[in-house]
Image (cartoon, rainbow, N blue to C red; front, side):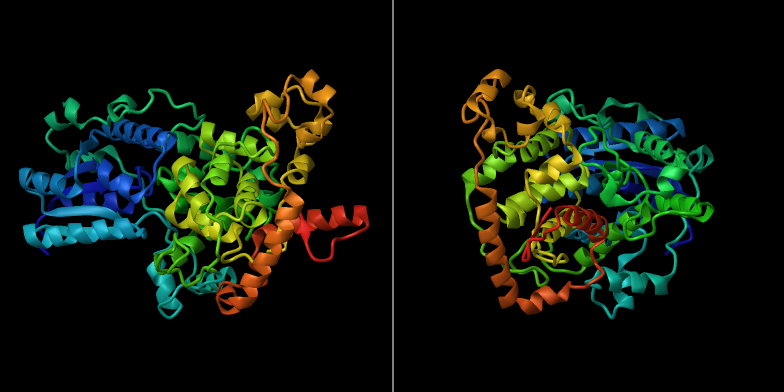
Length: 533
């Protein structure tokens, strides 16, 4: 490598931020000119990821925000549309580029892209530098430490982290001086042709109806808001947050982490400082820091597990003969199951691109092992399209978990689509907000409107079976049958199930178990073979 300063293209993919950006910092420190580039390769993105309207909006907002923040520091973001390989080839020649920098990612499609760029570099004579920016650790270090394979239980994973020690500190903030030294020719930033496209340029509706605004600026603002209340952060325990608080009562930061508008390392260290000053805080695995470690766990396993987002050919996943039923899948997807709690959640997902993690549990269990016995892959695809925080590793990991295909082993516990919501929101406020057709139902019927007498339905102005569907399954019969099917699968595939099994693995256990046992004490009875949540 020459000691001459480089002429560099810094390629943004995820990591759409300026704070704690090690790769961009390295680019600025090794170069005489840095071109910050985002290649909007729609064909590549759409073949790799199923992105719905709200996610497109969030991405475009994040690019605009990055453009504004770079401009403030005297630089610019050059958004170029087209096939990433040909765009790179053209601009490497045009700008005499000697180095391309980009964040290391673990998704197969991004790994392949990095490989392609390295091959291109070898041909055209530019260096490629990639550093870790999206995870707390370099997951390759975790694999090495575990003998080259991913630790498949959370307990084993935490053990390896304890040997590795704390993650690297976030890197220093970038300044106007950094960019001044490496400014691309000023006329570049002026041109219309490098601006982030507007939604209508991509045939998207102009306005996003989601309350979430993409970008680093908004992400940092939310982060500050949450950390201001340090007592709150120090007492955060995940299972207690109420799914029906109409505004997210968890940190509401996940979409910013998944696009890299926020750095997980920055968040991790801010939390460490708060914990250090605090006397009584909830400790991992359910505290906020624990949430970050679960994210890391799924990233690590996904990085080294073939076919991680599929059932077939995935060595850690139970091979289950799920039903294929387009019509039923569609009812679930379109919020037409006839269970108001499930339909309200799916409606919120459509409208806002975010639902509470306990709400995710409820609809995922309903689709898979609870009621419909439809494959987790189908649910994963719907979440991938609609969730602003959808993420290759975490989305697949959670769906395997929630369908009890891997990681989660208390499969006798099935969420009840009536009782679960009722317990957290007895008045049904959440349902009234997202399913206005049921607004006038009395609280005692709103979770099971089909049980309301005809007179009550008329008074509510909503006849079940006409204005709102009848329930698509009998929950008790369906879940009993599915429980037997699951038992059988797990006996036949005992070896696979054991791979990801660990008794102390389940962060949802603690909170839910406590709630359940209190409830069962009150009832004074307990169903022997199943626990309905």
